[in-house]
Figure 1 (cartoon, rainbow, N blue to C red):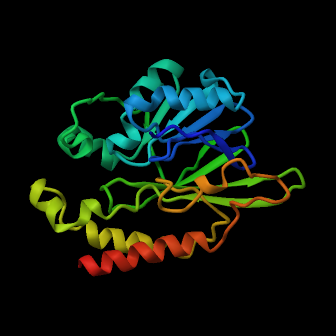
Figure 2: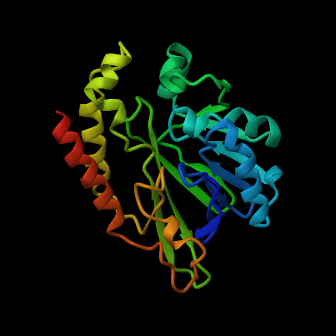
Length: 252
């Protein structure tokens, strides 16, 4: 059972994913942004979570895709058609989706293709209302995995830096993955290590995991208080990246 009650993690930042995959709702004050749309089958759960938080799904103006795997973008088109939101993804993973849909959907039958409205441009942040999201291409898990960074402020004006690494899974970098999917780019392990090292210097107050098993957040669901936020943990970010770097080094 993947059903998960939605919960707040930071000012204007809400977890609306399942127990398996993270989806994040950002309230910009001028419309909503949804990071990752999960499986097609769980779209109704996301919509239900958005409503439970008191928001209208029709206020979702942007859908950001972290990377081209069906557990993160399987539901993108359904949400795109329902909300009329603009879809953003990386050029690299769009190309992968076009040329090698089997690398996006694997052996899974339920394939619902989508067309993005725009590609990320790391030189130009994505802006909506009070939110300004800096995108960083962090290849490895897929060629176009993208990470997101943005600041939120609480009622007292105190600022918190939020970070979401778009995909830290090493499953796509293991030898058996290469055997099963011929043609998968050979240089991704090296790129993965480089991008982890590059992000190590980022100071992140609140880490938003792409999958909640990567950074424990579900155990703190419902405990958010503005003056006492259990999700503020500057150690979580370097710990996550370092653990993945160690794993990647063992693969090499």
